[in-house]
Length: 130
Length: 42
Image (cartoon, rainbow over all chains, first blue to last red; front, top):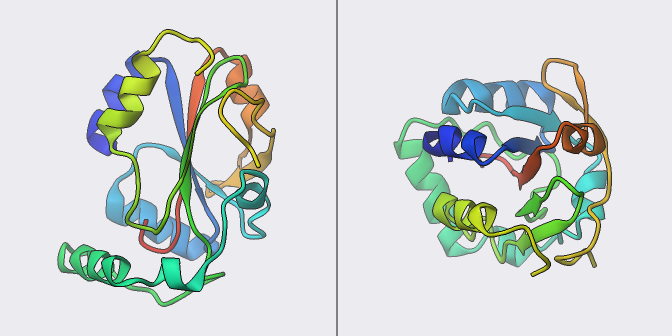
């Protein structure tokens, strides 16, 4: 995602990252990832709920998720323990400038995310109802 | 359940720097917005 920062900007798109962890965890995430986007805090997960993101223990902690976390730690990310609701699932949403949802992607599990290319392809489409 | 082609719910949240950011104000600037919801390591 970070490598495509210029393309998101060219497509007039602001990327907002939303996290529910505590402030120190969010700051550590920013420092580790060098993410150039604004990081918003939703500790009560009210926005997660407003966007219909579910909670599931089994989908949150399946084998693929554990393997993904191990890979991230091998890549230098630090595990800081479980903070907040560890069953909260995630997702990606594209909202056009008129306020309309153009993509509502709710992940089956934490490893299930659309690629940056998929997101950019949607943003390149003419702005029309899907 | 929020679906495509429906109006996105507005929200206002703090950034890690303490700034208030709302979806509606970001859209008012004429931007599209990509919302990426995280957990733990991302």
